[in-house]
Image 1 (tube, helix red, strand yellow):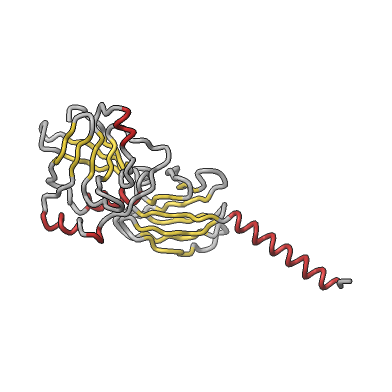
Image 2 (cartoon, rainbow, N blue to C red; image 1 turned 135 degrees about the vertical axis):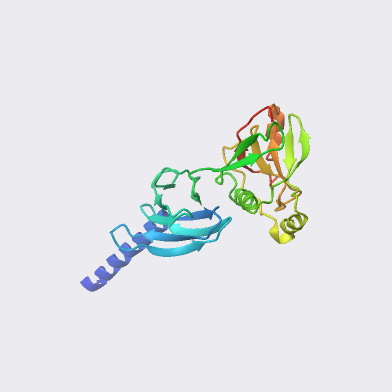
Length: 255
C-alpha cells in the first residue's frame, strides 16, 4: 500500500499534468503585422498595476512577430504618432482586437496608426487634376499592403502612368518614373511573398491587387478592377496566388 506521501505526490503530479493540458489548449499563436514606416515595440501588460514588459520589436514596413498567448492577456504598443494602443485577447472570435475597436482576422492583427484602413490621396493629370483616395486594408493582404504603402512613402508612384486600360476588366500601373528605383524594386530579393487569399473578401470593382508572373513574384505593378466587370470576370480574379486584394479606391466613374 502507498503511504500518505506517495499519494500526495501522485495527486500533485496529476494536478500539474491537468494544468499543463489546459494551458496547451488555451494557448494560441498571435501573429502581429507592422504596416507602419517605423519599428514598433510590443509590450505585455501584467494587468495588476505592475510595469509593462517589452516582448519584442516588430520591424517596419511589413515586419511580423509571433507571440504565444492566452485568453485574458493584454499587449500594448505606441504608434508612430505617439498614441498608445492595447491589444486584448478575447475568448470569442475575433480572438484579438484593439481596445478602440480596430478589426482583426482570426489570430492575425495588423498594427496601424489608423484603425482598419490607411487612406492614400492620389492626384491625376486629367480633369483639372482630379484626385481620388485609395483605402488600404492590411488585414486582406498584409505583405502586399505593406509593400504598397512602402512604395507610396518612398514616392515610387509619383509621376507613374497607366500602362494598360481594358474597359470592364482592369487598369494596370506600376512602371515608376525613376529608372534606378524601378531596377531596385524589381530585384529578386525585393519580391514580395504571396499572401493567403483573404476569407470572405471576393474581388469587386474598384479593388486593387498586385500583378505578378508566378509564385512570390509581386514587385511594383498593381491593377484596379474596372467598373462593370462581369460576375465571371470578378470570379476569375484571385485564381492566381499573387492576386489578393489589399485596397479599394473611392470609385469615380468619370475617371
